Amino acid sequence: MFRVELGSSPSVGMLVEVKRLALRRRVWFRSLSRVERGVIDLTVKCVDIIKSGKLAKVVTAIIEKLQSAMEGTLEKMVKAVGLPLARKVSDIAVNWGNRLAEVWADDLKFARYLAVNLGVGK
Image (cartoon, rainbow, N blue to C red):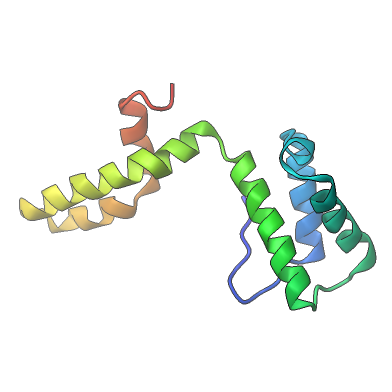
């Protein structure tokens, strides 16, 4: 989706894209307060580059809130159930001698497979 790296501030172009996605997925008004929406709108209109550390911190928090709101049920369950289960399966396979199974622990596709097969995504 979109990601703000630690130590960097989000770009104004990124804020425009985030807003567009949030409006498209119908979470812009539902998940953000009037003040949060105003912060994003004013930042886009009035700033070319975010230089203020405080503004960057506030905008990053709002972006993370939107990202969480746009995340689907399956993605949430993959993180909550699929990844821990993938780690357990990986540990068991490694203990049985399969050294290649170490990469399963962080494989999102494998975690999604496990979550769907448990019936979590239905």
